[in-house]
Amino acid sequence: MLALYIILGILLFLFLLTLFNIYVYAEYKDELFLHLKIAFIKIQLVPPKPKKEKPEKKKKEKKKKKKEPDEKEKKKEPNKVWEYVKQKGISGILNIVKRISKLATGVLKDLFSHITLNELTVRINVAGETAEDAAVKYGEVCAVFFPALRLITEIITVKNYDVNVNPDFSDDAKNSAYANVIARIRIIALLKIVIVRAFAILRLLIKAKPKKTKNKKS
Image (cartoon, rainbow, N blue to C red; front, side, top):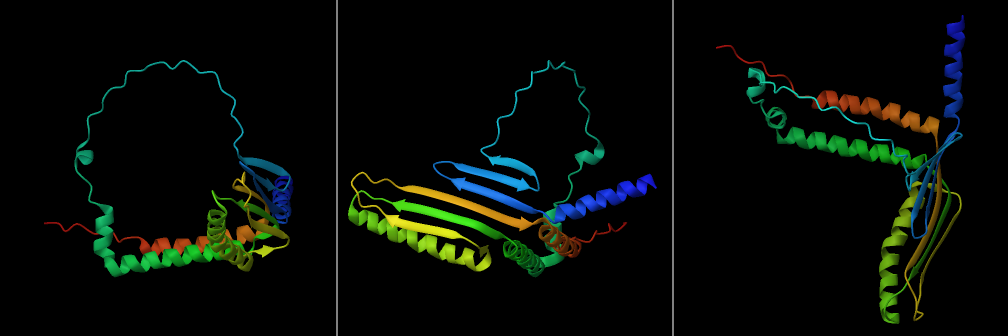
């Protein structure tokens, strides 16, 4: 009975864990700061925490005997990539590449559809050597930034965002950028994506596996 209670306790803990969210805190102001929070655990990703230096242990030098290569090692193994190409052909290779790209696109689409941005704050000041140069650079930044922002807001749910891109025509103007992002995703949604896509990857690997060629005996 004790073992059953332990198993039930572990299952209950895992179930409660799936109800929590994974939070990503990202902030950029001259330097990138990135934190990850899972349930009650907070992990600093960037900049990494300095590791404590361990005292170096004296390594005893041991003389290693050189092993003579076996006859099997001497024989060159056939190129597996070339064997695969010969079996599948170019059309087969292209079909597998197409399946991989479709699978990767599906994974990213599923992942982004479950992500919520609680906060998206971006402030960019664009400067130049002259007022005309600043205006040109401002147009270039807007041409790249706002289509990307539109794509993000179409795929990902954004609850609160404050975005400003401004040209700075003052004499002592400098380029500056600030960003603050808080994103979250449910652990259960992430597990669902992993499980569903894992089966798709497994099927793809089975189909892509080259067949073993039997050596004809003379």
